[in-house]
Image 1 (tube, rainbow, N blue to C red):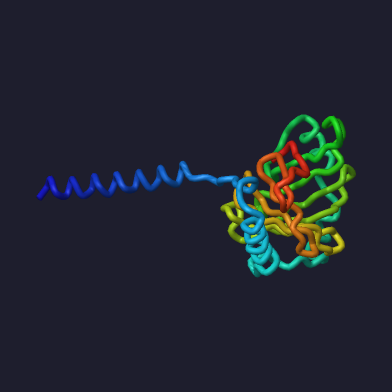
Image 2: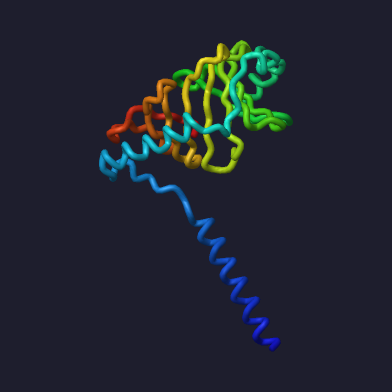
Amino acid sequence: MKKLITAIIFIIFALAVQAEDLTLKGGVIFDWLDITQEMRDVRIGRYSAMVFYDNDLPIYEKADYKQFSKDPDRVKNYIILENGGTETRGADLCAFRIANKQFIYMYGVQYKDNPKTVYYYDALGKLKYVDLLSDNYPNYPYISRQYRVSGRLVSAIYFVSKEMQYMYEPNKEFKGIWYKDKMFDRSGKEILTRTNW
């Protein structure tokens, strides 16, 4: 009887390890360039429906973000970013640079106590955009909608993974699919690149 119980425990443990291995080895397969146009259009439609009709995202209300209209830590954040830093004790930071990475024209602040909202400031610390992330963030998949300070929708993105996102314009038109540092249009043509993904 003791051997039977030991064998059962061993089998359960082995199955658990196998399941964990499958999860750890799993990943996103980028096949956008290899599938038919019809298959691309089906995916575009499926993710568009999720991005624009998901009630999981909060509604942007301009008054809710008035207190963030100026970054109170602008100088500190700017110095950290200029020196290659990406976080403070209370926030994650991301710099957006022009040309040869010389000039920071915008930066993002994602407060650790409210990670489902990202604030984008110009170099002078004035709020320009707000990203609202769905409730399942930081787990994939999740959805992001970006708004101008005025409340106008700028873009909506379905994050399949860190490497792959489907991006849509405010009019629900498909802008492209990001895979790592490259964006491809609906027909599979490379249209943009990025350096920070």
